[in-house]
Amino acid sequence: MSKPLWLVVPAAGQGRRMAADRPKQYLPLLDRPVLAHTLERLHSAFPQARLILCLDDDDRWFTPEWVPFAQWQRVSGGAERMDSVLNALNAIDAQDNDLVLIHDVARPCVTQSDLLALYQAAECHAAGALLAMPVADTMKRASASGTSLHTEPRDALWHALTPQGFRYRQLYRALSDARQRGTLITDEASAVEALGDAPQLVPGRRDNLKVTHPDDLALAAAILTSQLTPPDRSL
Ligand SMILES: Nc1ccn([C@@H]2O[C@H](COP(=O)(O)OP(=O)(O)OP(=O)(O)O)[C@@H](O)[C@H]2O)c(=O)n1
Ligand SMILES: C[C@](O)(CO)[C@H](O)COP(=O)(O)O
Image 1: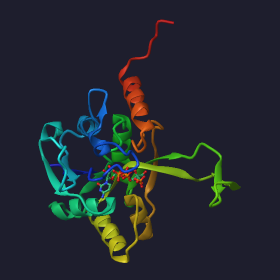
Image 2: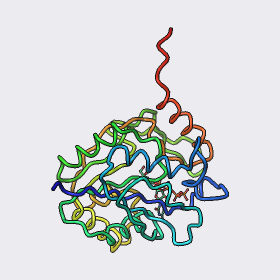
Image 3: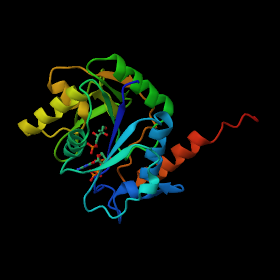
Image 4: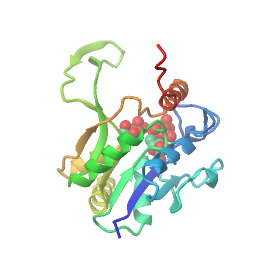
């Protein structure tokens, strides 16, 4: 029997920057909530995976019908994203070398090809892997008053995306160590880097948007529509 694949989906955020009437993962995106799109994308790439969904204990929006996985469990979210992921790792009966992929619920436009590329890289690299994209714009260092102080070199700068994938034992150690040090980390790769390891950057698509601000919903809808619409070859 092949090793299990664990998918951790942190979905316990409040979506403060979205400032909507509900957490952003429950806002409608085309025909369904953001969360349903994200889970469907993960399921189409990894139908046999075991899903661990981190949800706020006070969540009154979640509906299990949106979960397409046969094997899944709900765990309590934590105060920060890293705590939600740690709760998931604490709740599962994984072997040290099992692969764990973590994907933000707020990234509903991730494609099957990116998911599979990340999975393969995480399998191959001992330090794990993350989807990422090279910075494309000229980067400015701002002053406190919002003026441009200078231009930062952008060579070798990447945006971190999700999914990110690691061996269970390594990820558990990395996140527990970060928590014990009191270091607030915003992605799993940061915690692994702090152990002295260097996860592989896997170039991902630019449309793997994290729905964060109000404008992002319309963008996500346009991205999903364009991904689903076959190109017009009539011209
Ligand atoms: N305590 C937390 C905080 C965040 N998340 C999840 O981590 C992902 C990335 O976080 P972010 O985009 O910052 O989401 P929110 O925390 O919801 O947004 P905001 O920071 O604007 O409040 C999201 O899928 C979010 O649900 C989580 O599971 N537990
Ligand atoms: C993990 C992440 O999506 C990588 O881009 C991101 O760091 C998490 O959310 P944040 O609130 O933007 O830090």
